[in-house]
Image (cartoon, rainbow, N blue to C red):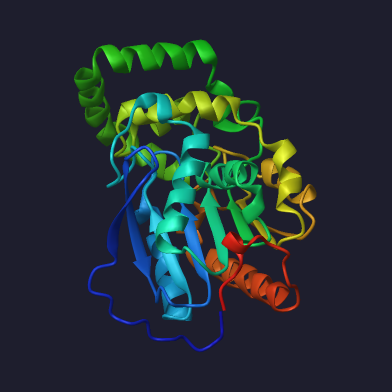
Length: 324
C-alpha cells in the first residue's frame, strides 16, 4: 500500500464488553473513532481470538488512522468472551452475537464485515438471519479462508464424522479436566508440526495435522468440540444470493489444507461483485502469514464499498437507514 500512512490516535482502553441477547458477555476491542463514517467488523475463526487479527490490524491502523472505526471481538466461548450453554455453540448463535455487537458499537452508519474461516461462515449466517441489513447497513463483506458448505468433503474436515464428533463431545463432558490436561501436555509435541500446517506445507500427514489442529490452541476443548456439529452441518449456499450486488472480497491461501482454496472459487462464482484473491503458498492462517497483502485487499474492498455507496441510494427501512 503506497498511500501515505496516517497516525492513529492513542486510545487509552480499546476494550469493552457487549452482552449477547442471552446475556453472554462478548469481549470487544475498538480502534479508530466511533464517529468515523464507516465501521469495519472482524470475526475470527474456530478456536482463535481477536489476537489472530493483530498483524493485519497494525497495517490497517497505520493506513487509516482514525478515519475508519475498526471493531474486533471474541466469539462466545473464545478468548475473553464468556462461556455459554454448549447448546448455543452454533454458527447461528454466532450470527446473533454479531448482530448484538453491531447494535452496541455501530448502531448507525455503514458497516463492512470481515470474517476468517468460521468468522466468514458467521457472516453468511448473518446474511440469512438479517437480510434486511444487506445493502443497507452492510455495504461490503470480506470472506477470508471461508466456505459456504461441504467443509467435511475436502481438506482436514474430511476426517470429521458425526460418530467421531459425538464420541469426542461425550469424552469432554464426562472428564473435562482430564481431557484439557491431556491437551496441554500435547502442545510441546505438536507445536513444530502446527507451524508447518499453518504455513501450508504438504509434508505433514493430514490425519496427524487434524489431531494437532484439535489439540494446539488456547480454546477449551468443550468449546472446540461443541462447535463441530455446526461446522459439519454448515450449508449456506442458498444464502449467497442474499449478498446481492454488494462488493465482496473472497481471499484464500493456495496451500490451505484446513479449508482448501476450491471453496473460495465456489464462493466467488456465486457472488455478483466479488474479487477473488489467491495468495500463493499461504496456509489457513493467511491473515497472519500475509498480513500486508490481506490488508491491501481489505483496503481495496472498503474503497469499492464506499464508492458504490456514494453512487447508490439504498431503499432501506428507517431503522436501517445510513446516518449522515
